[in-house]
Length: 164
Image 1: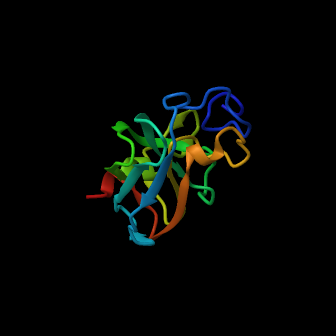
Image 2: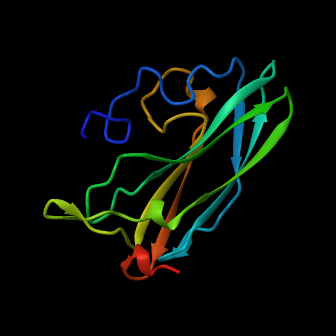
């Protein structure tokens, strides 16, 4: 899948998800969620999106997950949640998401079959914003307004099916 989908492609997309929805600008404020979670936890995320531009606009608020230190190869970025919202000039809109246990788990290959997922401890990077978290994307970088934060998952590797 390398260089075939946004999840594994290191270069810029011609039209990233959410591209072209708005002719205004937004500011993101992500509420703190804590920096440590136990294995098998879900991670709640809340963000406030403020229209700082000169006209009303639509925004696709996107949440991406990266697991760069997993024991098996993972996507560079994975879209785990999104919501399209309409925000009037000067107004703010609060959105809430939950990254599920399944989304936080990794899949292991076993021969030609895939085993069930495992929830591993380690660092996760979460991105919240109006576009894909591609650092070298020069087009409207301020408009994408991607906020990133790190969380650490502690505990021992657990099969996802054993998570309650």
